[in-house]
Length: 384
Image (cartoon, rainbow, N blue to C red; front, side, top):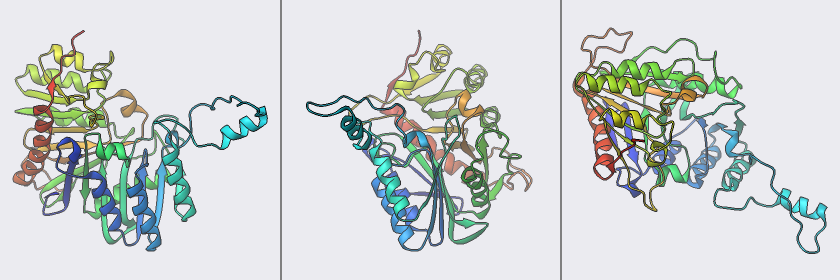
């Protein structure tokens, strides 16, 4: 564990199986185990049995647990095919298929098994009905209208799945601050009430000072995270480092990177090898602009580079659930958080006063992980 801002911020990178520092599944389990009163969880997918067990154990300790999930990871997209076996009637074949477990390595049965257990144990579970993607990944602990117990928020790029915790490169950040809790609690209340997509988030939240480190939370689509990311990038006087899963040419972020590189800033990043080669990916234009890109080497242990992470100079970190795509910016339910600032004299409403040494510590932590991924990866060439 790495702690920052007077222990108000914890940062984790995983998985250990791929050389990163932390076991993200354990981080999430221990965060849940710290709850004394309430847990409000908004996550795209939940198939990790240890995390599900931690939620059930919390419920049996008397903790009130509420969950919002993406229904696409609970509902099979197409009706299964029915083929009668020898001596089996068409009706019997249909009923067998209707009630049998879904076969195959991509089965959603673990998700549905967890859902059944949560419902069986009086956990309040709802599925989204956003026609776009419900892409949130956060937990609000011990905060409903007011702070109780160990109030905190956990968020980042990791879904609560075995794959994201053990095979995909991801990050998790914990904030110990009731103001940050309040922002995420408001988002959870909107989601739980079925209010998804545009027109639900209000004005962009103010920045809060956490022991000298400004922190601002934004929710897509209303808070237009893409513009916030570009705004922070354009403050760079030296370098921008990033690690990103899906990076589309429809984003304006690649254009800002190319402009920064042309202006003499160092821009370098790690990309997912599968997403990066797609025709629509921004990697091709970045590569043509001589921006150095690296991708993890494919191996049985490696799944995806799933980060959504950027570091600007030694001052600012931008992280969360937000991929650099038009749908993420325009339709999906997402969150990002901006940690730090390059400016010395910010007013209180913008998160000042700023302790630049503390901002640099957080930036250095995440830049080190990006550099590690690049160092064990291979140079990505996306020219077509």
